[in-house]
Length: 466
Image (cartoon, rainbow, N blue to C red; front, side, top):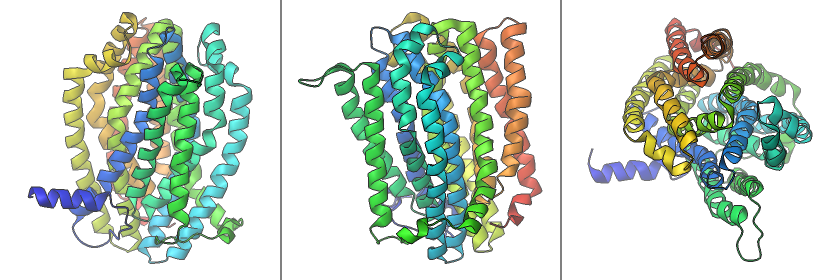
């Protein structure tokens, strides 16, 4: 492919147009979806890295890093709700688009927003009230809980914005317009990057807010990203043309969405609770520095993994649209093609991590104890990158088809019945401490990838109706 052709494809991928992926080249369909989805997920991961960078250079960096990391770990429950509902929205919207019914697609998207916002308001109020108790429960010291409570309250209190960001992006992805999702995250990140140093360190009449400033900057940035999404969703130029009447509860549609979303939410709650347990286990066996080192390595690992997750989301849209168009073989070929590209990407990332990981870590903190733990954690956890990638593609395949129960069961056995017990035994009974937790992560991901592949070959996902 010539340079001019490559540039043309990139321009088309990020232009923000809704596309029908039931016709034409599968490779081109994967590329057109994967480019904006990878950039979208890279932008999402930058949120945590920006916060980590600026708070990592505060005078109490171990407390600040631990607070950011533990709060992000708890926020994964909110992410689970957001991702579960966005998964349902993507599956149903993509299926209706494949059936050439944009009105039904728009109605499904608005009902998904209604459900997710209603549920999250309850969760965010609870988390706001009990923020300090949540940090202590996660293994934070009393000093960390006291200094970090305001940060946690702001992040939890503004979590409805996180839900909307994920969910509306899921609606756009289902409609075949992954570029708007990417653009909204770029806007959110630009403002977060600008506001973080200003609000953390102060500038002119703006007082220094320290750790709290990072939370305010993130909340403002994400809110502006949501405003951008809402504008493009309601300007009448896209395939989906939502109306206020579509927000009126439609119980059959709500029931259909919850049928897909509920196991999807459980699917990610299971994974999130596992990560929360691991974070707590590292905090109790490794102390503040051990916890900060683990959180630093985890944020870096997620930075590299989220683009692969974005690429794997291409499989969800392609599967949904092609099953809607009754093109089952094309749906399967789309998955295999996506998996091939994800494996190539993960091999490159693995080489970068092993070759330059210590430089990346040193960029975010200058504490030698944190650096040592983070380096060890990153090297061990990164050994499973290829398995993480394959697992993500296959999980996205099931979810895009509306078969959200299959990955929920895989996650339950892989995380709760295998990863958690293994981490606990290695950390506590074999006295490996945090190292035992680091080892358990890639081992469990290998098992999840193998189980997902066997279930993919069985083909139940091809027969799901949504």
